[in-house]
Length: 507
Image 1 (cartoon, one colour):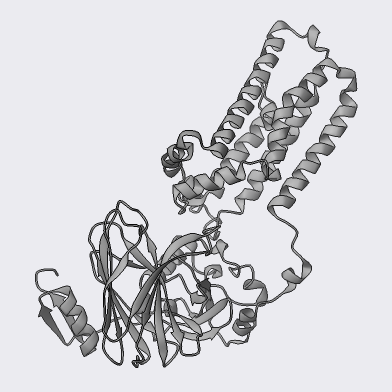
Image 2 (cartoon, rainbow, N blue to C red):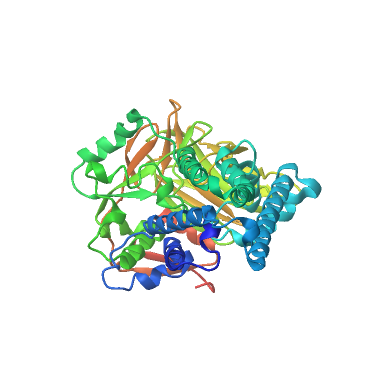
């Protein structure tokens, strides 16, 4: 009904609500809409944390336009033959546009469903240009569109049928103006029923038990003394994709980091970015964070936290992790990236250096034209295996592909720390270590991060940031070495905190 509200001559209310709807819609897009940063500089608006609240005003404006359009849709005045010639021509042109739009939509839907001449492959590059900040690959977005625009989805079918029937209903009103009052009542009831049915399909009514259930991790955080809680998220995935953020935390009296209102949002954003990028610097302590909440993802029955995000490329990536168990038997790495592109190849190296015992070395290699990487070298003390897996995680809908790299420690002692050194081919594809987990002798799995694990259940884990904020450190001496591998080995083996190992000619 909205296009009828914009038909000429346009009413003042239609212009008002159109401008409001467009303005608030752009605001609700946040930084993607370009107006959010401008509004944040206005007095009183600098305390707002998120832009999604403006969706309410945009929805209100669109609803008012739909109501105005419904009113104009049913107002036909005199009988159609008595209309001026220009009005009749305009009415016929509108009907032709609606029918053409319906025909084009039906044609596009048929092409998506039946995929003639590999139409979806043709559409994927176009979707890649238009997807904006969506992190999903374009082929998966095209597949999602084809699944949505089908006869099996009533939330699509009902509005499409309503658009298709609009010219028929309009013709009926023109030919039978005396029946318009009764028809308007039926049409208003149908419109309200359509809105209610559509909203119930998108947001089904949850059972009372699900609403009132309090996860065990919330009880654990509520009983902990002091400090605030931060949510560990995968890079690029908004916090709204996680079940406990922050709507399940705040009602239980748990102080959530992003809800800290005494720090202006722009400055808080910088603090949170620092906390994500510099985990070893204990930036969470600067924010007063005592608990790090993780929503676990299970891959082959192994629990992972996906906030690690180590990029394995041409430069060394080094991370020191805290092992929850004193006697792990296997270390599992969940890898992601352009590993499945047949046209790309490379080689990636992983060195696991525990605080006790010798290092374990594993190398993956993939030649162009091959489907999956394979292990080409492994440490004699243990063995390793790699397997393609599919798993679901917050922000990625129906699932994603990855590699499950499992390294057997061979019964050797590890201590309480594990250093990971990773590097690989300087050219694409780049591999990311999404998460690391350990498996004990009893078969239990624990996610491994640079923090101390303080609580874990079947779905959530709680970590503690280690150490106090380090503002400045004095270096006793600087030692020069020939290459990065030697610098990494010396830094891990020697463990001298006041020595800087630098590469000759590189720094």
